[in-house]
Length: 519
Ligand SMILES: [Zn+2]
Ligand SMILES: [Zn+2]
Image (cartoon, rainbow, N blue to C red; front, side, top):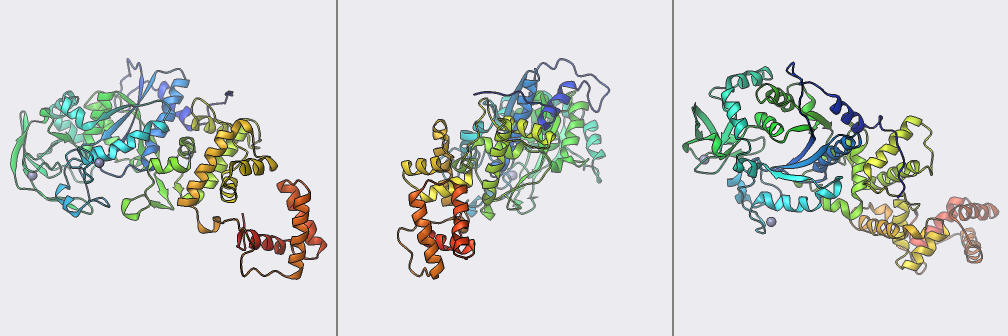
């Protein structure tokens, strides 16, 4: 398909990539960055929560930066990391109450409640990984934190963190109101007795081990019960994990990360991002990556959560829309709250189609800056092949899908209104199928209707309405109509009979759809 040259300095990911390439120095040290041969963009997801479409924003935005870097001539790689050493914080919806005993255990150690996988983590990750790469520009190399600890990948960093433990405490305290309580360890062991990871309180730090006692730990909404066991653990043996404010820095240094996404809650000056950035540079001698900040996706203005039943999984999205459309949603200007509701899907489709028409020069966006931005946004939302926008809007598709079920009828209707192109046939029918699924699962009642085969009982029309309908039926049979000319004709007929055009529309809707309003 044809590809247009689009100006690139107005789109956020292009600006981001440019400043990344131009960056020469550490942020917290007066030191040059040497030997950067490749830019690694890290994306990830914590496996302790639900893997909904909100989690894709991290990978989709990371992918945009990755692509912009490559287009600017840099060598780049996109990776994905499962943060699967995180503890289970509360019992998710639909999981038996007996799972309370597992709260505080790493999600990779908890059995799969559905019994189809080895662990709770695998159960959630597998489904997500089946579709994840569909949303990014190139398949990502994927890692598991659990496996990395087991392999010993973090050993050199754990060593350094302990060697410079005093400086590490000092850095952390700068960002805290209350100083850390000693003995403080960046490493949290897994309890040898009960397998929990948040309950192990450090009692002493010795040369090559930490001593702990297993005590209750309080999450916001739940408690991980400690078993009272007292034990010791060698951090270099990998049975445990680094605390988040150290672990993130170790991940950056290990994978040589240049950029990573972070929710906008990390923007505040004392967030884990900046603490890790300083740790990364001062303790691990690795230049802190640049953050790709973003807003979280809300559904109807509220956070997605299993208990609210508003979770949208990536596979749900693919039933009614394409990856391109989600990329479009996430690549719009950053730091604007992204709220989504299934009702808005029609509008999102319209915005996407509009951007496509501007991109291909079929429509003109008057504001020149906006026009440049829209074109690049459309290009970046697409993959190598740029989709030609369809003439049939998604809302039109929802009407067609309800009126006709036969392929010939559909083609006939779309041809009549000028929305059918043979070369788009596949895409048209794909959109109709998505519209059908959207109607079944998500459409508000007022958008659903069915074509009546007979005049529905109880429909009463005035004499003038009846007459107008008779004229209209005759006209429709005798001539060919487009949407516009038919609309005009209805007004003409109404005018001739001195009734309000609205009355004639209502009569039509009552007869055809058995409703007072129509599409
Ligand atoms: Zn399973
Ligand atoms: Zn324990």
